[in-house]
Length: 494
Image 1 (cartoon, rainbow, N blue to C red):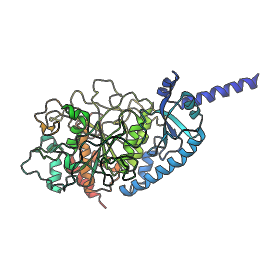
Image 2 (cartoon, rainbow, N blue to C red):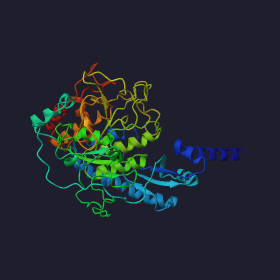
Image 3 (spheres, rainbow, N blue to C red):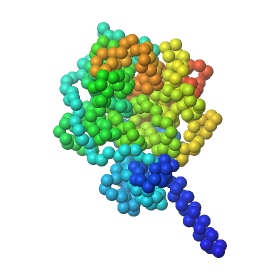
Image 4 (cartoon, one colour):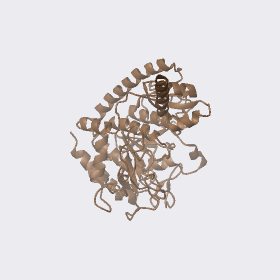
């Protein structure tokens, strides 16, 4: 009887252990008997747990960013390739599965039985919801093929410089230091960019190894016709949003203009008016997000602007954090607006990605340096997130990190050409973030070898403190100071 009881208990504990590896959102989805798109996170990862990233940063504090990126991409791919071959064989997964390397994970659409079988594997750490998993290397065409003429020298002569750029001292970086963002690439993880807008056209990144609209993966990077970037939501090289054709203001074009609008139409809207813009789309889930990060890393992006805020992710927040920490370790600075949810109770005002410790969350103040009534405030809690369980409340994680201007009342790019000026309606921390991303582009233009985590430290050290002394949950370290940040970057140049 005792033997039977112990055996029964062992079975119960085994089932509980398996169920604990299946995310609650996945468990709910498979309870109805249908197949679900999931990410099977491998047990072996480059960074592990809440201290993995900080320990990595300490160990690699003297590294050169671009060399470190090359090394880590090789290392991450080596881990993924070795582990995923064994996992596919063990679970008898079909060839339709998609392997990720930024995190060691396999994406697949599996039956409930297959998901439960995967949870039994010692190679599987956790099973997350994946969102859509497009098949193939891409389809469709880009709507406009831009010419390859020489980029004109940047000049402020005869052009308007709006107050928000002056307030963060971007114009002083151009005039005093002669730095305008040249050589830096900013990935715009957004809803698409009107790459034919006159103020953006010369600053759109071009894939040097790809020929447009020939239906081939010319450079062998895995994606067909990705001349300007890629849409991982629909598996398409077209990165211009449909709303451009509808005549509406477009979010990704607005944010891109704040990063690198060069003033061709008469008003300079961009902090870094000679940085390159790499439009990337990946809405719908963790799979698309991982592909966006991988593409940005492999194709030379220095900073990625993410002007969105995802709620209610539960433990999937931990997957996003792992992706972000791996990407940051590999030299990609991640920036996000801090959100527009001040009306909600704390600590849920900052979501994903802005609530991730290594992501630079940009809070917002108005022209009078007062906090608007929509701007999200900290802190952020991680105590309930699987594999991390740090930053418990009530103290939590201090966020935002720095602040900029969410609008309105400064000019932004209008649809197709020109500006919305006066601008009395475009507002939100979506537009604070690009001020920071543009400043990072200026910093890398001055010193391309700064590690990504050091960039975050410099931005906070050089910010102009607001309110109570020190970093706080209202405005972070204070108002962004592009001039001081770029000077600090130059001072650390080896």
